Length: 254
Image (cartoon, rainbow, N blue to C red; front, side):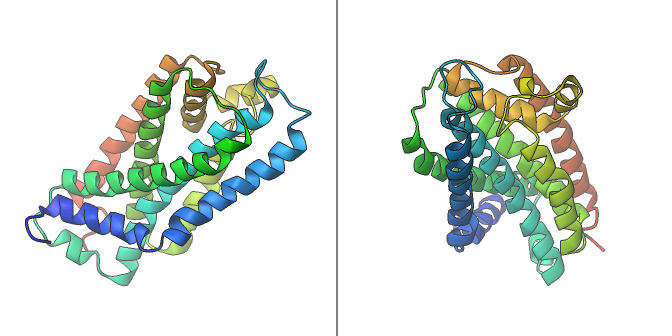
């Protein structure tokens, strides 16, 4: 496409990459989240109330939306890097005079777009099943963007580090998945024993989901400003690591 800069071209390529197979990259995770809601909501709706006046299904929807945003943002950047490395076409990304900041920005922004697309889809297909309020919509926007950016950055780090698909799968299965499912998507940490409440506070995913949920109900386990500070620090640290890896060509240039 004429007139496009290197950054815009790479971003276009990354967005087109997941959009071309939208059935797999967008529709499938939406259906998975809908199944979670149907199963957990049906089973626990009359037995669990996390916040006074908030039905369990309503509590569950924001958690599922944010979980989808995080998992798919990670999947987009990580899978793109590992596929390019294994198929050998990464050289065509590295040859143009793109700075490490442009590489970082294009991969992470594409990951954000996919994460938000899936999250919006999950919200659209699940919101009709319950009543949701929007007490603090800015927190919804802030945590969705920050969470997608952070997981897109984590995916970039994982994709650079991994040399084989099974290494990336191990990163996702033993780190991303447990951290996501143990972050309060399906429960409040106040329902856990004291030791597990303490452990949960070391999980940055918990602060993303708790802050995101606050935007809907105005209720959360942690003050949203504190959650925002924690997530921001993790994002800055991960971004610094990712940029340095790109700058040095770590496992990219041989």
